[in-house]
Length: 145
Image 1 (cartoon, rainbow, N blue to C red):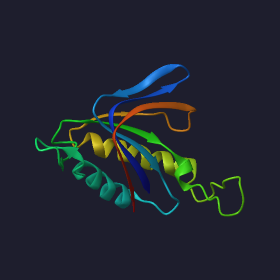
Image 2: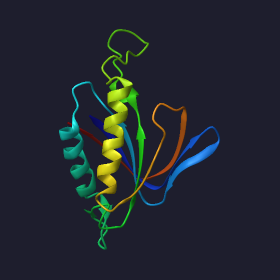
Image 3: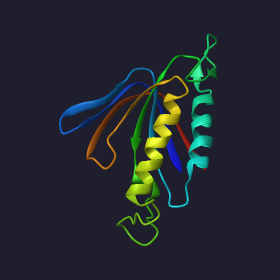
């Protein structure tokens, strides 16, 4: 499982010209699922995500978590995180999990984040989504398990 985490001032996801998810200060999380991933990897990454201390404290140091600032999450499925470009110029996505498995773990990840008492918005699995964000910093973190 791979996460691209972007600290944002705000972010939204749109499907067919309708905003389906919108947050203020927090994280935009692009989430990719690999074929060997299980709930164990998801549980681990949820805990890393919510404990990640990259928000500034009163001294301007990155020392606070998303829970500390009462931030929000926007979680968007992103199978292209498993792109393999080693064989040419057209990426192969065979390293990504099959849609049924990926969607199940995506939904599981969202639910586990909600159980942490964090406001969670999300995209629509498999849809053509347009994502807008104002990256804060910029701060972008890659996590995988």
